[in-house]
Image (tube, rainbow over all chains, first blue to last red; front, side):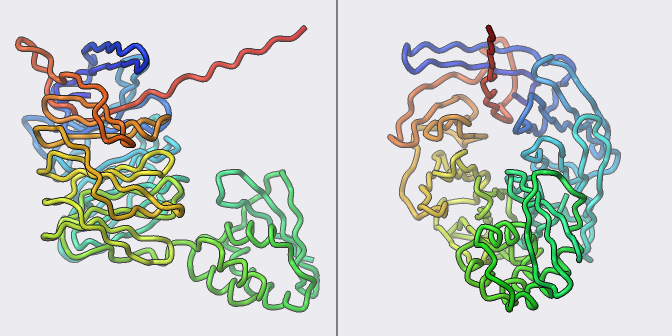
Length: 156
Length: 266
C-alpha cells in the first residue's frame, strides 16, 4: 500500500520465472496515507492520515482488502502528529492499538473501532508518545517503550 | 472440598479443574468442558495448597506443567515453585513469565522497533542510542543479549514466522541484517547481510509460508530475497510510471492462501 492510496499487487512464480504486477486504486482511502498496517489474520488494513488543514486531527480508517471499501473511519481530534506514531493489530485480529501521543494509548475493538480501553501513562514530563508497541503471539499482553527506553508490559 | 477451575494460557485450550480436599491435598482432574475462570482465586490459593501438599502423594509432571503454564506473573511463579519440591524441579525446565511489568532494555534513547519472537520467549528491541547501535534481546528470565548491528538507529525488525531468523533494517543503511536463531530461538551474532538496495529500506517482511523468503522495498525497488542463500531472486519496479504518481510504499501484505475443504460421501 502506498502513501498515495494505491495498492501494488505482485505475484511471482519461482518455477516458471513469471512475474505479474498491477497497480489499483483503493477507493475511499484518500491520498495522504501516513502509516498503514495489515491485520495478521483476515483482510483488514488500518491506515492513519492527517487532515491537511488541521494537523492535530487524524483520520483512522479500517479498510477491507477483499471488498476494497472503507469499513469504518474515526477522527481523533487531539493528537500529536508524526510519521512514526505507532499502531499495531493484535495477532488474533481483535484489537488495534494506537498511541495518540498524549501520554495515552487507545485500544480499539476491530470491527466498529469503538475504544475498548485507554491506557494512561503516569509520567510527569507531559506529552510523550510511546515509540514502539508490540503484542505477544497469544495477544494476551502487549509491550511498549517510552522515551526513557523502559519496556512496559500490560494487558490490553 | 474446594473446587477451582481455569484455562491454561497455552494456545491449545486446556481447561482443568483443581480439587482440594479438606486437608488441602490437591487433586487435579482434566476436563474439556469450559468452566468459569477464577484466575485470581486460583493464584491466591495455589501457593497455600502446594505448601500443604508436600505430604500428599506425588503430583504427575504433566499436571505440574499445565498448572505452571497457567501462572501469568513472576511473583506467583516464584511463590508456587518455592512452595513445593516437585513444582520447583518442574519449574527449572520451563520458561517463567516475564519478570516485571517494567524493565529496561538498553541505554537511553528513542526506540522505534519492538518485536516478540513467534514463540513468545524473546523480545527484540532496536535501541537508538549512540554508536555502536545495539539490538537488545530480552528473555523471560530478564537476561539481556546485545548484538552490535547497524551504523545508524534500527528502524524496523521482523522475525520469520517459524522464528528461524530475525531481520533488521536501520534508518540509513541500505542493507538488511539477518540474525539466525539458535535452538532456543535466541538470535545470534552474525555477519549475514542482504545487499543490493541503493536507497534506504522503507519496509520489509517475511513471507508467512516460506521462512526463507523476505520481501523488501526502497523508494524504487521491490526485492524478493532468499535468506538462506542471501541472494535476490526477483526484482520489481515499485513506482507507477512517468505519468502516474502513486507515492511511496508504506506496508507489505502477504495474503494467506485460502484453504478449501472438499468432502464427499456415498
